[in-house]
Image 1 (tube, rainbow, N blue to C red):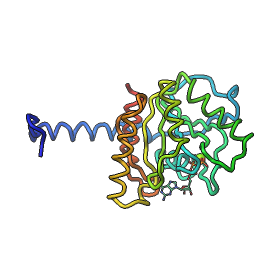
Image 2: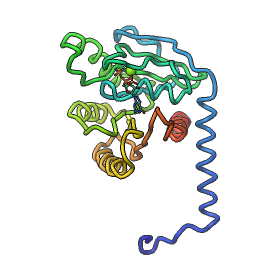
Image 3: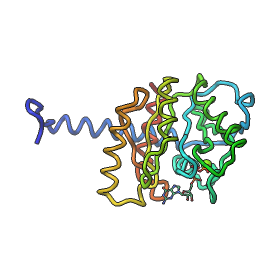
Image 4: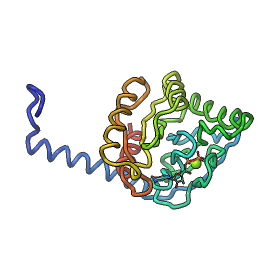
Length: 227
Ligand SMILES: Nc1nc2c(ncn2[C@@H]2O[C@H](COP(=O)(O)OP(=O)(O)OP(=O)(O)O)[C@@H](O)[C@H]2O)c(=O)[nH]1
Ligand SMILES: [Mg+2]
């Protein structure tokens, strides 16, 4: 039932909304239909490429599915290297999407076995990048739909709040959870986003395995670089 005073949308309004959604999906499809090339790897903060294109960084715990999501977005099976073992991505990998957008595949955080020294090195660099990159337009913060939110996730969200870097939560591996559990998870994560000033209110549910939510995420990214 609709809220008191809020009229149901007329057929014309519904049709307009559908046309808008279709246009946004088409912009997303076009953005990701061209070339996407790996162009830079940074292992240290003083090795970052010069600030140029607007950048979208993909961040999240080790093994959450960051590299897989980039492959799904760009429609390439092996653009970014997918892990057999956690902790695979150990540098910031920069990809150029049609000269319009920089996509950044980040090392995962929260990987206990990585060892203190490694954690200091690449995890430190990752946090410094997130905090201080002027061209960073948005961070996609990936959360595994099957796993509860961890302290390390909360710490990264707090860091992004403090740095005033907009982040958007993206649930991954939704193919591996039942629809009812996914709906509950999504509601909980939307509430979490509301508690963070830098968080975008919309949470996207994706699967790199089935492609669910991928066209919608492309549309969101097209909108993020247009605005
Ligand atoms: N079922 C399922 N498995 C997935 C999905 N996406 C990724 N995986 C699996 O999760 C594992 C980790 O994927 P990656 O994409 O390498 O994860 P990552 O976040 O880049 O990992 P690091 O670089 O080590 O931090 C791999 O075994 C993937 O096959 C998905 O949508 N569904
Ligand atoms: Mg990776």
